[in-house]
Every structure is written in C-alpha cells, then in structure tokens.
Image 1 (cartoon, rainbow, N blue to C red):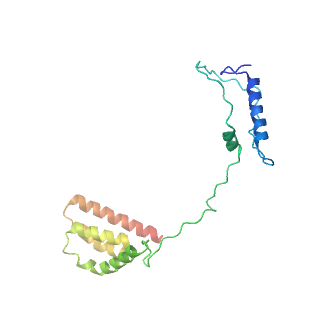
Image 2 (spheres, rainbow, N blue to C red):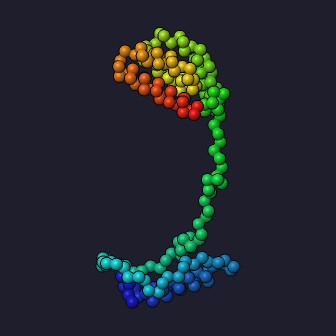
Image 3 (tube, helix red, strand yellow):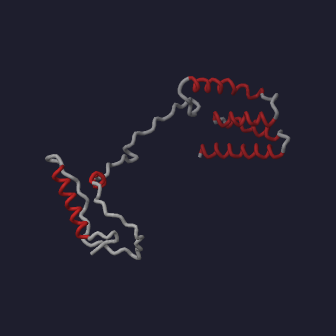
Length: 180
C-alpha cells in the first residue's frame, strides 16, 4: 500500500528497522539504545486528507531526536520539594523592609515622622490627607484614621474630598478584616 508521499509502507517499515539496527550496532558496548514504540504496519486512513502534490521524499527519523523523545521525562520538583522562599526582614511594626541602609533609613524616618503628624497644619488639606494616608498605610496605625477623616472633610474640592473619604473607608475595611 502506498502512503501520500508515494513510498510503500513496507519500504518505510524496512527503513525504520534498518535504522534501529544501525543504532544498535553503532552504540558502545553495554549501552542500551532507547527505541521508540513500534509503528503499526498499516496506518489509519486519514479522513478527507487532500494531497498537495508537493510531497518530497520521506526522510528517515533523526536517531538523536528519536533517542531524546524516547527517554523518560525528568521529574520536576513539586511545590513541597521546592526550597521555601526566604522571608523578608520584618521590622517591629510588622512591615517588610529592605536589607541594608535603605531599610534602616526607612525605619528612622517613620519613627521621626510619627510624632510630627500633629504639626502638619501648614499643608493644604489635600496634601495633609495624602501624608496621613501614606503614614497609615506604611505603619498600619489605625489611630491616625480619625485625624485623616477630619482632614478629608476640610478638603474644599468635592471630588478630591469624596476620593479621600473612599480611601478612609478602604483603610477601615483593611483594619477590620485584619482583626477578624
């Protein structure tokens, strides 16, 4: 029976068998050559396959590729076998900090800024609110929320005030979920 490329199936099987035999004889002594599973003698007919008329000669399978494909896959590490991620350094306030000088400066700035929060009245209400919100999010200090709310109510622009009030709601939700 002839396949679409014009090569007799028996001839194709003979070529494959001779390649396998050649691999076995060329392999070093004691080495087992992985062989792909035997191909069926009669391939299943292709459903409505239309020949393109541009079929070239059939090339035998690449022995190197055949060996690679026939080898069992290397097992991958499962999640339980993988090395756990190193936890980041955590400051006493419970926040991730960078290693080294930046982390030290960050902690110092937070400790210096917290006592000055009551002296931010020189800022415009929107700027003061942004500063308070940043500090609330940085150190998770829920005691600053009433001051942030009072500052948000002093913002003259209604759109900015509404956004500030929504941010306060988000922070309140964060703190209530954190406790529960």
